[in-house]
Image 1 (cartoon, helix red, strand yellow):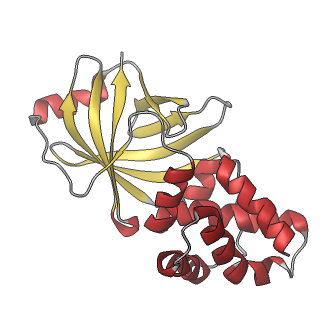
Image 2 (image 1 turned 120 degrees about the vertical axis):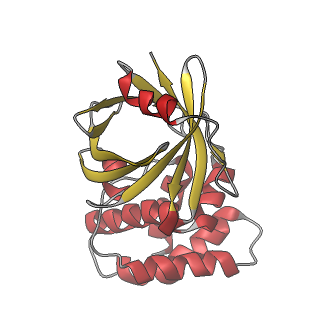
Length: 220
């Protein structure tokens, strides 16, 4: 069991975990997060190894390797979304690339309603993932569609909640990471903060996950 968990932790550090599982409950995700927060280990890999071995190990020991990998991968992505301590650890192991910055509070927009609503008028968009990959974005017919470099995509419903705030509701995805990270009906808020000659600065807010991050969406 320790060898299996160690293999998964190596996958964690390289960021190559995928797939979804129904084996792992929300409560188990919560227990792993609590253990990470309370841990006094100084080494991040050891901290994660022990937390996973304690809580996920017993579940993995009862299933075959293919399901065990799915269970681990699902845990990996759900922890990124709902456990700030785990996300912090990942950022230390693999410093984010691109334009992403964590925020302590939501900044006020510097834009007027007209400028914000022009966000939907451009012909094309793209942004950088935290791993540096470019994601092309299309906005049309009240849909926000992400196009990834492997040919997969994610589809979300888009709508305004106020002058400069968009709410994006997840519909579906064939991208392994996104379909593990989000479930149909999950909502994300995008606050338009500033406009430059080639990009908007946007604040992503996921309230239930206590996530608040700024990044750039480029247009052309």
